[in-house]
Image 1 (cartoon, rainbow, N blue to C red):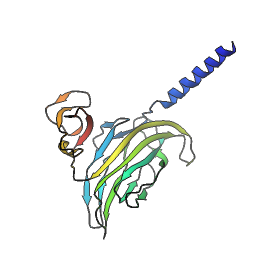
Image 2: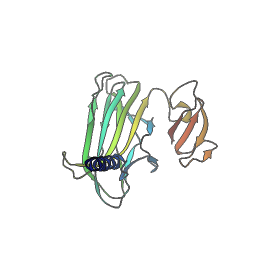
Image 3: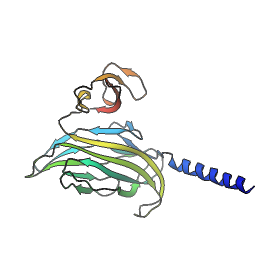
Image 4: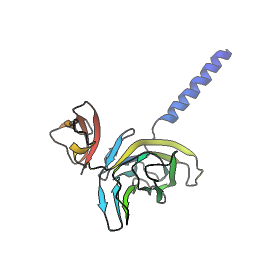
Length: 226
């Protein structure tokens, strides 16, 4: 009888943990056209702005509140690598800038937010990798960071995490590749062999927005074309 109770308790605990581990879709990563970037995907960004004061790579990432209710959001971000420069993220609260010391990046998870995200609205994450500032040499290479959305109980810094949302990897490029399909990873022996829409339909050519690209080495990737 005791063993049965222990087994039942363990099973209930396991099911509760599994339910908590499920991805919450209150908030979703989307592109400028509203296409979803699903949990587990890698987003490659190439858009470059050259100004007199600075040169920066824009992520092109947005966050959508998919529900009919206002909700509190936060985003966890963790640096994987960076060739230098600085990284800025402005969603969902204030703009936070991290300066890289050469190629050394800070370790550990950092958080922006929480803050209120209105129902059925989409907000620009305003993520930028600054690769050149006035009187400095332009940084060449990539900056990689993981991003995870969270639904929070309130907007206080110590608010309870109600649920974890999608988690993606962002790769910002200033390495000579372009946003065209052929230049996604710059590998000479890796070429596209097929293009698909997000619902699995084969396409004759890449279309504007998100595409699933199959390469000659058997790998696939989601790639944006503007």
